Every structure is written in C-alpha cells, then in structure tokens.
Length: 116
Image 1 (cartoon, rainbow, N blue to C red):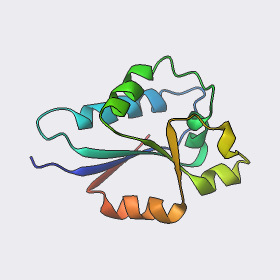
Image 2 (spheres, rainbow, N blue to C red; image 1 turned 60 degrees about the vertical axis):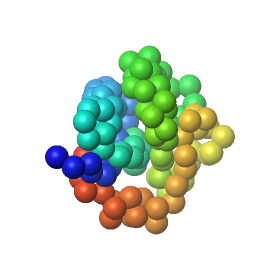
Image 3 (spheres, one colour; image 1 turned 180 degrees about the vertical axis):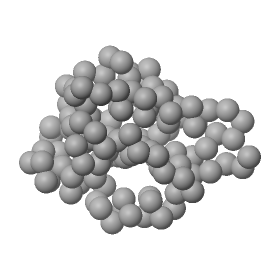
Image 4 (cartoon, rainbow, N blue to C red; image 1 turned 120 degrees about the vertical axis):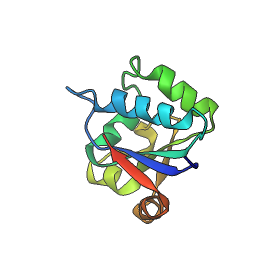
C-alpha cells in the first residue's frame, strides 16, 4: 500500500464518550508502520472543546506526545470556535487555528477522512 494523506476529524465534545481517545489512537496508528501516512487532526463542531486549555488529557497524552514528536500539529477550525464563543487565549498552546477555507483544502487534499 502506498502512502496516503488522511484527515481525522474530532467532532464530539469531550464529555461522556471515547471518541477523542479512540480518534487519537487511530491517528497514531496511521502515522506508524511501513507506509507512515501523512495525517492531519482537526477539531470541528463540539470537538473544539478538546482544544481548550486545561482539558483533562490524561487518557490521551501519550498519543498527543507521539504526534508532536512526529511533527504533527493539532488543528482547530476558527469558525467552530467563534460559533461557541471560544477565544484564542482559551486554547491549549499546542493547537493551530485555521479558517474554514483551509479546512476545505484539507478535505480536498485527503485521500481518506475519518470522523470521531
């Protein structure tokens, strides 16, 4: 199998589900192995709450650290933040805010998308 570009979206709030943990585990799995796919992680909709400073990351810290070591930056959609009244200073320092137009570009460039 050849290397692919994969977009993982986190769309659910961090409360009462395992979507976030399982999503990041899948991302790390896609970046490892023989093909080492190029991946992007994007927080959309209620998933932006995972990007907040102070969110409990104890279950996912090892995945986030692995992604950071691989040079992967967690992205969050600016418009989803605005719709929820979340300011940039409320975000964790390891996320990058991108506009919806850049989200469309990520989707268009992806060979495969997976939502969690």
